[in-house]
Image (cartoon, rainbow, N blue to C red; front, side):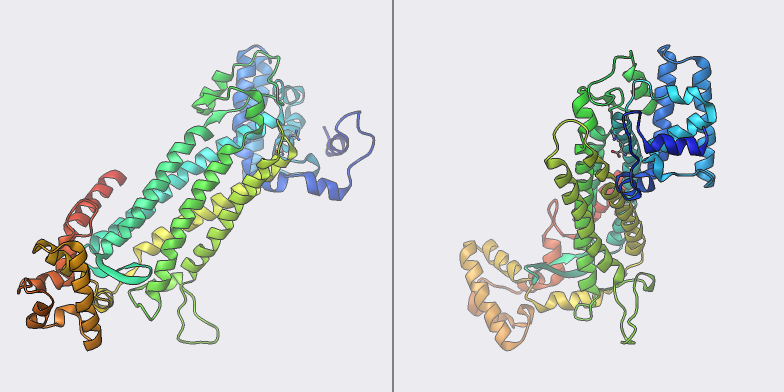
Length: 465
Ligand code: ARG
């Protein structure tokens, strides 16, 4: 078929159509310039379908061989950049099929037996997303490992833990970083779970009602590595839950990245001075020569809005659609593609950036000493001496008030002064009031004591190995 013939064919779908599309409408309805990225999945899906058609006696051995050969050439053409993508051919599916027919003739025209672009596109997107999910899983693991490395070096580094962004209690910096490792571990778990629902085969549902050809759907599923075949053709061609679920999981990853970013930005600001990021993740200012801006975490925080926006887009895309396939569904691709691209880049950059953090333990410790972070420890000390907790809380509030007035830390009040709040207070209180004493005291599963943090580091290492 010549290009000219292709053009003519595409201008009118069939004898039914009596006028061509305007260029504007063509551009509006076509998806090839973004869905061409599905080409590998499209070829893979077509080959599995053709192999099954042959196994079922629906196409000849020669046709199957021609399709196989034609697809090999198309693969080569696309990889080398020689393939001519045509807007007139609407999408990746029609572009590849038309080229196949151009190369191998009638065998190419037989490929679409028992198939519709509706079940084809759903299959392609699932195949493509499945492999992206696997890559994202690896990237999440790499980021976790990078964070575990920094945590391990900082099990004994103390910084103020905050609630309401007010100094609350001293915590280990390692413990703080491992909180993010927990988040990213849950994210990885979520991806593994939703992958099961991505990994189901719609092919064989045809346009919406199934097909009258005796297809072997299980065979195609096995060839393509799908765990199950869809059980309702109407649902199979119209379901985009898997895309929404994935984008929701991606949004959560980005939300975790964004929270971490916010902390990195705060910690790097002069008022905190807790860390420094490597220069290669920052930029300067064109007017203020002293500036070093944490651009990468700021952008990641911003890109979180973009990914959450894609989630909103996909949810809204689906809400009003009647069964079964509607052209609306073509709009699932760009949000999904951009979500994957944004997430992968972000995870890669963050793993590198985390590995290059400079920690400033003195500044962290100085800040931890400022906000009466060990006040709870004094209350706990009094409880151990027999005071009810609420009374102990009140006693310590008085002590803190006086210490603020005197401009000193609780640990700097003389024993005789402390004893005026409660006579049970003894010399051993000073160990309790120290940052390290406070940290070590929280020695239970999930607590911030360095012993606990070290055991968590070991657990994560085993898990990530
Ligand atoms: N490009 C279309 C999409 O992405 C493929 C399916 C088109 N099906 C149809 N009946 N027009 O959704």
